[in-house]
Length: 164
Image 1 (cartoon, rainbow, N blue to C red):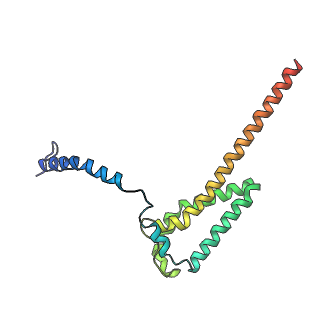
Image 2: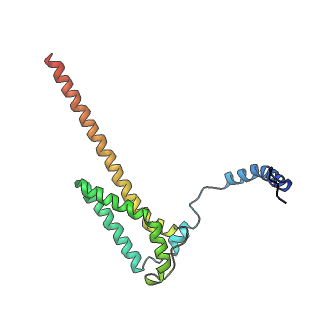
Image 3: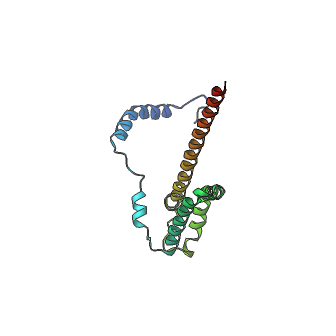
């Protein structure tokens, strides 16, 4: 029978046991070395990289990186490229679901798990690296413009003081 006023005696016993075990569990967790997420190396090792769709995906990522490099001179192209990549990363979950349902049409093996580890590694991560490169470039350019502006302001101020 459930008590409406608070925890039952069995719940008290479970809570007390958890409180006694908490320091032991924390100590055991601290002793374990930090490592990569489980399955990361397994996923990369067991992937058949010769499959045509994976080769096509690699070519797509190389093209995206080249477009990232070329678009440094063309700001509007870079903004569009950045937004497309962010949109693709946002849609990765839906792409993973669609690929999980239809993997037999284009792949020999089922790579698309419910956690999305595979698509995160081979699809989203390279796109995010490109977006980070673009953001770092934007920050660098912004800092340069701010430095130039401050230098110009100081020159104008010095010129006005000289005229006085």
